[in-house]
Image 1 (cartoon, one colour):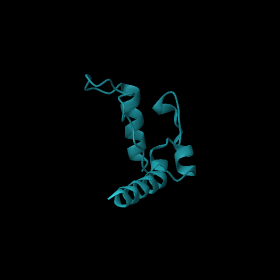
Image 2: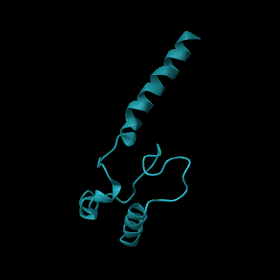
Image 3: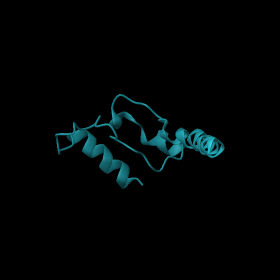
Length: 79
């Protein structure tokens, strides 16, 4: 039984080592709308994950600030 548990632990550790890299930010800016689109294109970034921890909009708010909304529309419009 202990051998099976150790095998599962080792597989889980390997899985984490291979996949945690995807959760590390590629770019960090103090304001999302300061990220230049040219930088995203140069890095061939076609997907961004934002506001996973309510940094753009507090959890109790529903509306985006105008600057962020405009930036997100610009991103979408430019592919």
